[in-house]
Length: 122
Image (tube, rainbow, N blue to C red):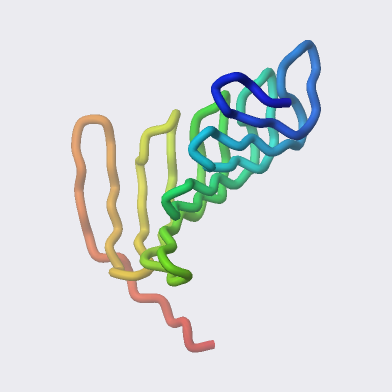
């Protein structure tokens, strides 16, 4: 299905709303691949922005919600990668693999601490 605003959807519909597995492409070229319910992203999926940001994780009612992995890629090179946690589209936790930074966020304050270095040798 193609809308007048340039968005396109390939997948299932129920009651005129996107449902089940599908792919939604935004007018700017960003793509969401995953589960839809009642017309919104809902469940596991991947978001690939037109500017190189990738988020693989969970959505609830069209908003990022739950754990995921996020990264930025430019010219074929991964610039950063992080484990993230969202609650109702708000970032509440980030473990940055590239710098070792751990960010704990809440609606009232932010605190930073160095995360433990992981032994990736084997």
